[in-house]
Amino acid sequence: MHPIDRSDASADAAPRSALVLLGVLLLAACDRGEPPASAPMTDSPAATEVASPRAANDGTPRILAEDPNGVHIQYRLYGDGEALVVLIHGWSCDSNYWAAQVPALRAKYAVATVDLAGHGGSGANRQDWSMRAFGEDVARVVKALPEYRKVVLVGHSMGGPVAVEAARQLKGRVVGVVGVDTLRGIGEPKPSPAQRAAQIAAFERDFVGTTRAFVTNTFFTPDSDPVLIRRIADDMALAPPAVALGALRGLADWEGSAEIADAAVPLTLVNAAQPPTHGDALARLAPKFRLVTVDGLGHFLMMEDPARVNPILIAEIDALLAQAP
Image 1 (cartoon, rainbow, N blue to C red):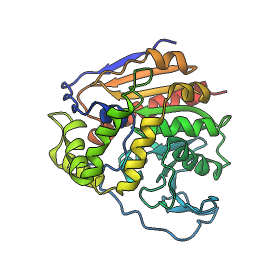
Image 2 (tube, helix red, strand yellow):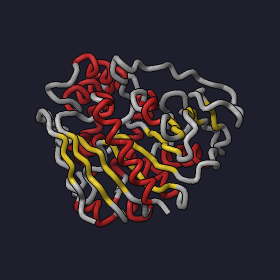
Image 3 (tube, rainbow, N blue to C red):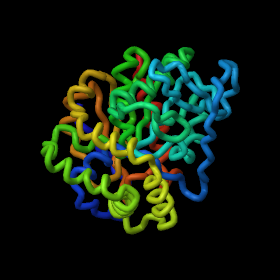
Image 4 (cartoon, rainbow, N blue to C red):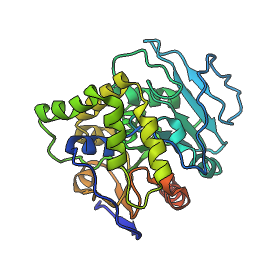
């Protein structure tokens, strides 16, 4: 199926940073940004008890502690719909980055928000920060909720590759993946190991300053809210460097093409219009591929304009559920 491009006209998006590798990696990823002022972040308490299976689906933190490596994963469950929508954050973010989507989505579906290992309220006591390992975090949450037989995974930035990896581990339950400003570089040449090492070295030398500058200069348009820009840049700069650097390397090692083909689920991307997403490779890899572009917004489009983006997400999730067997 050829990609379908439905553009929502508005202002031109800003050019991205000259850090080519990290632009590719993090536009295929992303993880600690904060929601806009209208949807303030909530604290992620470090819960110490495993939630009761009968706990209300009201967003109370739940903990999965049975990982053989001893890493606990925190998630929250909202709503009582028949289908489960799992929201996956990006690089150096946490589940609070979806705060502006939860009220709209929980009105139609059960919604799970996940803190990947090393982020938010989840444990960081491991060394594997690969996309496969993050995918296992998501798969563990879905397996803990066996009552939902139809699952849609929604991943922003790094959450896109993570969603693909989780879908590979959840065959038969995932009816589709929705990526939000992600998976742009599939099928394109990757930087050499030397180029990758040189660019990641800047983060190794000064993680806070480099992250703040990179996020500020790369992920937004000239019309983006400066308060939101500052909040996201400051928040992501406070990510644990060991986790963040490990995840960058994990992204660089993730090829994508074979993994998407192996997941064998319909794939929809809701991406900012700039830089362009070339979906030809994705259309060849996924059994059904759809591209929706949104003009005038940056990388955190779901946070910049939730009133505009939420209906798009709902329409695409509904379409995936409707075509599921």
